[in-house]
Image (cartoon, rainbow, N blue to C red; front, side, top):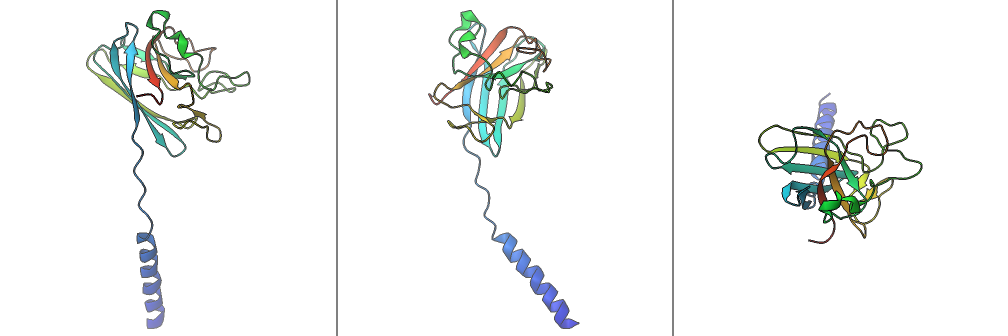
Length: 188
């Protein structure tokens, strides 16, 4: 009986020794941070994109009165272009991952596009923020299996819309005008 107890203690201690030898995880890489500019070309907040296992963590911070109160659609667009304020940020192109066989919408059975993101809520007063994760994006310049790269040769843009995205109707879920834009590129 004593030898069985000693064996159990030895097995337990060996298990503890093995688990302490597991390497500590490496810290996440530094996020790629960009200013979010509004329809008048002024900064209204910041967007940070951090590479994560299996996707990208997106962190948004907006200044007070940056957007009208209520829900706003957000999408990742295919080109890192936000300089065309007068044209409503149209140079940012279509949603990332837009294709003939994929439709817009997180609730669409034929979707989502890789650029489809949740709505954000702007408070009536004070600064506000949002944070979400997308498994359909990667922060690198190359696509991972089943994901779209944000930092390819022409970069990407985060677009904020005037209204909420219904996550189903085409082409942008009825979200309305583009009222905010953040460049995601390798350039500083």
